Length: 125
Image (cartoon, rainbow, N blue to C red; front, side, top):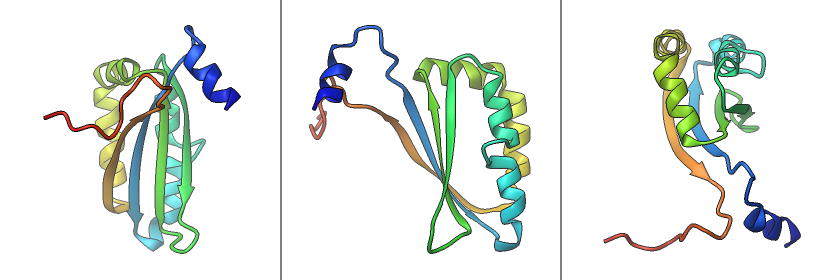
């Protein structure tokens, strides 16, 4: 409970934005996928060039070792949008490299923490 209270009351805290992607990789391409998407891979190297990038997690399905999820954490949606604008060409080049390795790619969504300020589960109609 204390961490939730700290999150709600901290006025100068960074409330990050998370981008989650799921990947199904050709089994023979898993090593290449790690090189591109892993913690020292080309994507992380590109992200590190941008202000507002925090970190990336690469997690693997324990039952299907060719299924992955990436969690990219940014200081804000605006930081990510600025990155996409400034590094769009480099982003597209890496994306094309990944297409050779990946059988299916799905954006799971753009997520944020609910620090008590966002309403959830409400219909906007």
